[in-house]
Length: 150
Image 1 (cartoon, helix red, strand yellow):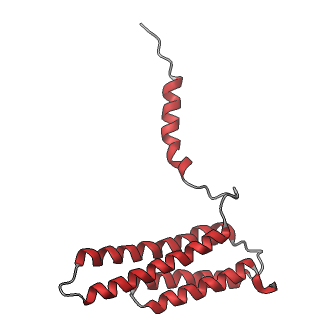
Image 2 (image 1 turned 90 degrees about the vertical axis):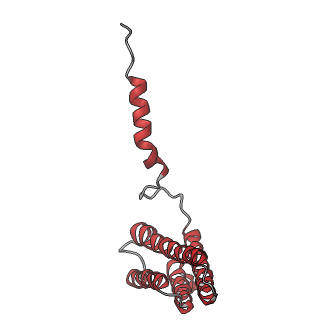
Image 3 (image 1 turned 30 degrees about the horizontal axis):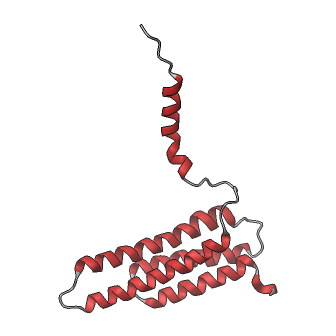
């Protein structure tokens, strides 16, 4: 009877089990993220939410209503609001804003308002919510990067 080495099998199983975690970003300070890019992504998602809202409003007025496209724009709006909430909660609140940071309470308050505003963007097609989202993003950007000295 031929002896089969178990080492290759163990290595393959290990590779398969860890492949998913290797693709996911860890929540440790590895230094590969760009804070400025995260803020830019919030603005980009806000623009997509606004476009989605305007498309939903326009499609809702058409006769007959194209429900397929309408649903796609609603889903798109929701997805981009979720992405903002993810950046705020999983990136800034979880990894970047530390209790000893300057203006800690103000940053927390603005980030919380951003989360709520993103939720309101999901609930409505009121573009004023996007305007508020952008204003809050700007307020946070100023606090976070401490642009007050410029």
